[in-house]
Structure formats: C-alpha cells, structure tokens
Length: 238
Image (tube, rainbow, N blue to C red):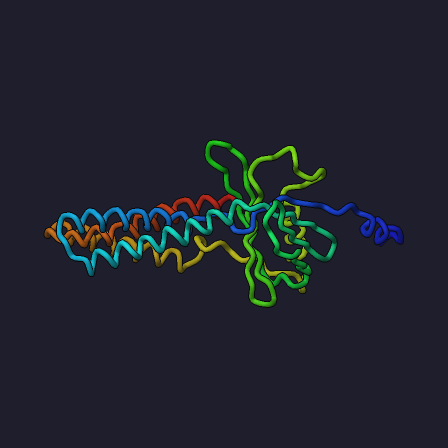
C-alpha cells in the first residue's frame, strides 16, 4: 500500500445524505388499508345487523390499525441528515420542533444489513432503502428522502454510497452480514400458502351465507399484494 494512501483516505471529504428514518413500507400500508376496511365494514354490519360487541370490537381494531399506521406515515416524512465518515455515521434530525439529539453509529456496530430500491410511483424517483441491525439490538430503517429542495445542503449523495461501502466491508471476515429480504425467505413462501388457505376458507364461508367470511378475505389479499411487490424489491436488490 502506498505510504500516502492513508493520508488521502483521512482527507476524503465527509459525505452527507438526506434520509427519512421511518419510511412507509408494505406493513404500514397494509395496516392502513386493513384498518380502514375494518372500520367501514363493521360500521355497515352494525347498521344492518346490530351486534355491538362483535362489530364494535372489529371497528376498534380497525381504528387502532389506522392510528398506528398514520403515526408511522407522519414520522416517515421527517427529514434526517446522515453524515457518512470513514468509521462512523451521524444521524441528525432536520427541521423545526425536533429536540432529538444527533445519534452516533460506529460502522463496527452494524452486525447485519439489507437493502433494496423502489421506484416511486408518479415521480419515477428511485429510492434506496437500507435496514441496519446494530449490536445493541436496535434496528434502523433508512431511505432516501424523495425529491430535492432549495434548502438541501450542498454536496449531498444518495444512500447507495453507504450501501456500496457496507458491501465492501461485508466481504471481510469482520464485516457485517448481508441478510436476504423477507420476501426471499422460506417463511414468506409459507405465509403465502397460508394466505391461500385463508382465502379459500373465507370464500367458503361466504358461499354458505356467512358474512364473517369477508373478514378472512382482507389479510390474504393484502399479503398477496405485498408479496408480489416485495418480490420486485428483492429482484432489484439482487
């Protein structure tokens, strides 16, 4: 190795990325759609066939899903500045009304990671997603913030710059482990078969006049859609 190479690496300018920390994903989107469907369906059933206990519980469950997914959606729009240095990452909140301190993440504390890219609809912006598993048990899900603004810091880079660095570190014995995406695993395939059985059960109940079968249709349909979209992400990350 040339003697001047360490000095050049040390002098390399700090890279910065604009990211969101809790981007809306398939789980949150499915929970939001399922929650809305449960609220609407149980209100209609309650009006047609009063049963406050069963339908009221279904409506409350749907409302809980809507509130949880809505909170994640609001948090997912908050911007963060990711400062990428040679051996450490700094994650600082941007905007007003945020009193969270800057988080320091040593690259050596990343034990595993996974990544994928997603083409955002209507804007046709390729957004990179990065999931980091840290040594203390925490999990960080980061994604490129969509679009650019006049107030963005100069010299910002895309999140794929950090992904490439993690890929290089993963090739060493002490580097982090690259994990496959969930929809590439056997568990995802088993859930797909289970969703098919649940879908058949719901259709069977509807065939004999049991309206409760409608409740069994939503989860497998939503999971099937997520599985199809997730396979596209898995192909992009390969």
